[in-house]
Image 1 (tube, rainbow, N blue to C red):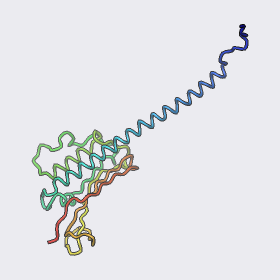
Image 2 (image 1 turned 180 degrees about the vertical axis):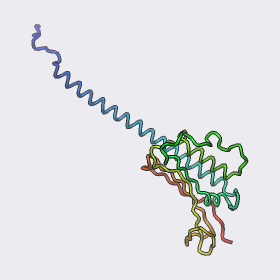
Image 3 (image 1 turned 45 degrees about the vertical axis):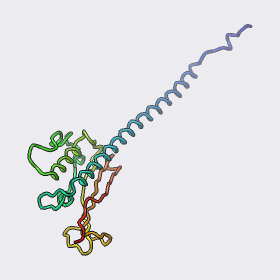
Image 4 (image 1 turned 30 degrees about the vertical axis):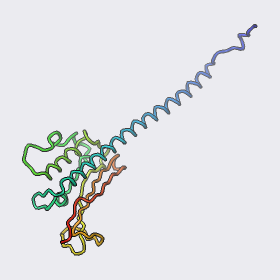
Amino acid sequence: MKIDKKKISGLSLLEALVSTAIIGIGFVAIFQMTNYSVQSIYSSGERTKANYLTNMIAEDVLGHKNVATGSARNFSDFIFENEFNSDFCSNPKVGTASADVGNIYGSDVIDGPLMKQRKWQALLNSRSYLNCKGTNERRSFRIFKLRSQWSLEPGAIENLNIDDDLMYIGRVQMNLNDGKKRKYLYFQTDYVTKP
């Protein structure tokens, strides 16, 4: 059997360039998918940390609801008077941590509600726990007071649907991804029964 060597030819330069271009396009697509995957994993991790910190605040409030401090009758009253708001991400020139990081409870003698607020400040004012992607991120905890129609509680919102004298509703708010992703948790923190 005789083989004609003129009919067997290798790759031409043009075929090699076309195959290189096709492989290059494939690699670019794979690199873009990898970059998207890494960013997605990062965002998912930040949301998981935000969920954990949100639940931690709720557990702190529910676990200390009968603790009174100063003029407040309970912990929910104290938070109502001293709303917690972390403006850490709103300042782009801010450092990496608050003064309380690593020293959550401090060296001074304070009561439980103030220690809880100091702990929240230390955790939410640090990039070690939750990063800031922009200046539109917000981390806050607020208590709303709802009162029945027969209650005379000052500063409370009247609600005809509650049977208790006073009801406290907490809202933890976490804005992530420069404010594009929002996490809210509403829960009943305490109540005062009708006399």
